[in-house]
Length: 160
Image 1 (tube, rainbow, N blue to C red):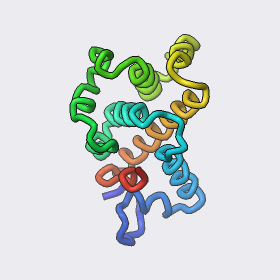
Image 2 (tube, one colour):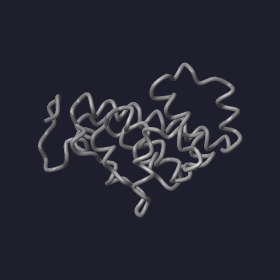
Image 3 (cartoon, rainbow, N blue to C red):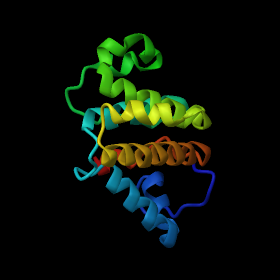
Image 4 (cartoon, rainbow, N blue to C red):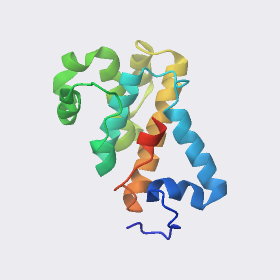
């Protein structure tokens, strides 16, 4: 049960939450759609890795259980808690994004120019910007849904 009052209109609480407060909810829902849009310049595998790494950091039950790329091996998710020991498995691009995402979610002040230079070896500037916005969305809204106890059902499967 959510920690805030949400109208019971038949939708899952986390989806209804976005529209309960129209001025804020519409903007938040637009960001959700944009992050999961095909227009997001991040490769889908990178986005999924970053989403899942932040879900682990946020302890978001639903996001940890979601599998948004059909057919992606379960090993991809199983190795995530120790991804630094599996950089050969994830490859340099995903590993660079995971480093950024983990720092973003757990120690954002440690991200410096050296980290952006490393990202520049694997991503365009538009992709780096999308990585930042995606990490911000996953971190902020993952925590929001967890704190408000909305994480027993999540709208990302509907947006994906």
